[in-house]
Image 1: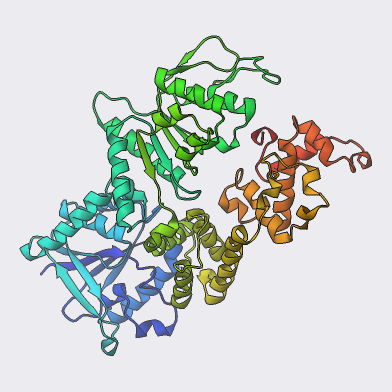
Image 2 (image 1 turned 90 degrees about the vertical axis):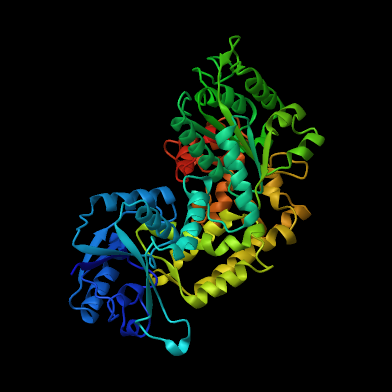
Length: 571
């Protein structure tokens, strides 16, 4: 008689439990040893090193309920349990290295692991890489039937009555495998259709793609995934060259001559300070894909040069009489409505017409609330993978957070950036890696406070500009008129508006309010001075004489470096 072996993931949530109460509930992996009709000789459990303690508990518990079962652990290292390509590659390598025996009947346990892992298991079994039937365990559906044993069902894929299951998994495979959706967590039908359309365009067209959507809607993330998809498609098609590079630039950080130089390059001596020549990002993107985020912030002169580069595939570096030939694909992103910008004379109509071949409007998080639970799971899994920890909500705290997050009180003005920052804060402050009601309530207060400010206060951009849109100076910040009544909440929010142009949300979430206000002020001073020395002299005017060797420029340089910033990046 053949032996029976079961292969499956350790259920980090369903199998969890370290005190005696764990015996009072159903746990899928342990339940495999509780059925009289299912005698498991070998139990192969895949787990990550950070779950070593839980794995040892499961080994001991299985030994108690089924002494004749040998438990064998297998380490897996998944970069992201939600990435189809990563999970499939890891499980494929596991299957390729596994010593399958003809004298053993194998069952693949589908209950544990993410839905991504379940689909990948199915594909490997269906393709014959794993000679196994599927087994699914489940608890009893009614509370009066509560039993740690639960139920199980063996699924033979050769049986015709499971054709419906095969079709469902096939649909999942077509929807997710090697597509843009492989790295996007969504259940929103309209967004799925949008991504499907973008995928078709990305693999069939080299025309510019314009992504329009609010800040934090995921434009940059989607642009990177479009590049990966276009590159994979190009490299798999005979006779087509692969996209060599992906160049991304935030146009909101480009100003004046710097914008021209960064994008189109310059020759030596083209302007004051141009001691050497520079190629520029358009040249760097030659043969690849260029993503211009916040393209609506480009000046009209830069827009004109960009249009020439797109239509004629050549441009002139700043100060040069010789053109440079380039060939690149363009993607652009903006949180502005470029149609209105054209009407206002802020954006060139001819450039918009060139970009408008493929325009896609990305929905805000508020318009995809059904995706909140899955994105919460994704963020916690990502943070856990980065920090080798396992973060989780208690059931009550999860319900509290989701109820608020999906309510009218949650405006999600920063979209997915707000959600990412919220998960970072919750995970960082949680004791024993467990997010409880008090943690959630404190976070709800933070978010409510953050989202109240734009609607209830005016003059929030005082730190960034005056009422005419000009750059703020020390005088405007310290005026004695009515505008000087800015309270601490106003200043804190205004400073964050400035810092978001230069710091990512994760870094911003770790800066104290005092440091945020100070740094925002220093940045504004740097922007309004022509060089680092002049800005340093202004900032350290009163303390310079007290130092033995005053070097204002070096003091400013060291201060900015504490936040990963450089003076020339702020101009």
